[in-house]
Image (cartoon, one colour):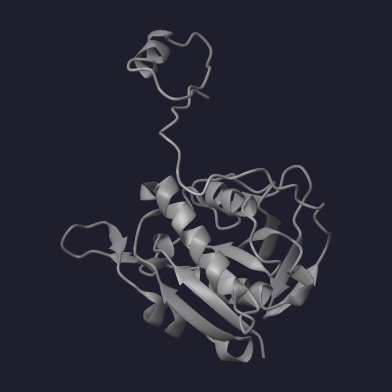
Amino acid sequence: MARVAIVFTGGTISMRQDAAGGGTVPAMGAEELLASVPGLSGIAEVEPIDWGLVPASHLTFTQVLEIGGILAATLTRPEIDGAVVVQGTDVLEETAFGWDLLPLPAKPIVVVGSMRSASQDGYDGPDNLRNAVAAAADPALADAGVIVAMAGELHGADDVRKTHTHAQATFQSPNAGRLGIVADGNVTVLRRRSPVRLPRVPERAALPVPVLTAVLDGDARAGDRLLDPAPAALV
């Protein structure tokens, strides 16, 4: 049976309603999340890595590179067949693409989250996590780069986009289409990704780089404020 490492970082998939504050807060670590997934032991042996409970919108480049280092070290081990990263969906497409650019071992790497918390009806965390483990355990996806597994679908990190604020099937691949589907722990590959050309990626996070979006009749003073003091670069 395949052995899959799972890096738990937090996000909606780990959240519950906070009775005192009224909102949802990160509450469930690796052990509790894994216990909520039925049939997981029939898919793969899992090795949990409790990295933290951080909302995705709070992740930094330094932390993303740190998790990338964990993936590299873990996947180098011969007994590990694949890896899953559990995180929030706010920046899931960005982190997945970032890890896709790293020179990681040629084993399945799957990023997963949920659109609803454990306190909401239709909590999609357990199903998504089970599907992600099934994908990470499938050697047919070893050369697929980093994959996003949500709502029973598999998407390549180079094309996937979050298209809706709360719909469960929010992650789509508008240009090339999904890579595959997962149902009842069974993976069906629908297409292959083109080979990934890896750029040179720094080993540590660079200085903050602001992003300026051009809009109709925008106020140019916003750009002036971004340039004072002068940043290392501007997008």
